[in-house]
Amino acid sequence: MPQDRDGAPSHEAPRGLSKTALFVAATSAILAAAMLIFIVGFQFEALTSGPHIAFALFLGVAGSIGVGVGLMALVFHSNRSGHDDRVAPHDD
Image (tube, rainbow, N blue to C red):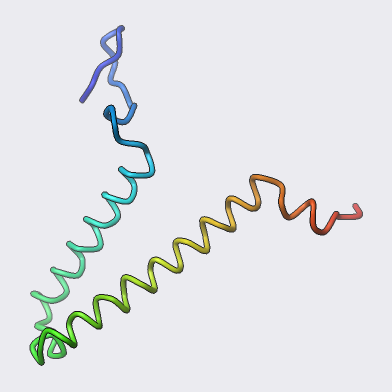
C-alpha cells in the first residue's frame, strides 16, 4: 500500500487512475466472479445450449445493471448539483 510522507498508509488512487475507473474495474471484477461462480456452481443449462444464448444472457444482465447504475448516478448528480431545486422550488 502506498505511504504518504509521514509513513502512514495513503488512500489515494494510483497515478493515472481516477476513483471512477477503480470503481468500475472493481465492480466489473466482482460481477464477473459472481457470474463465474453461478455458472460453475449451478451448471446453468441455458449456457450449455450455445454461445448465442450465453452472449444474449450476458448482454441482458450487463445492460440491466448498466441502466440501473446510470440512472442512480443521474439521481445522485441531480440531487447534489441542485437541478431539482431549480425546476420545482419547495415552499417550506
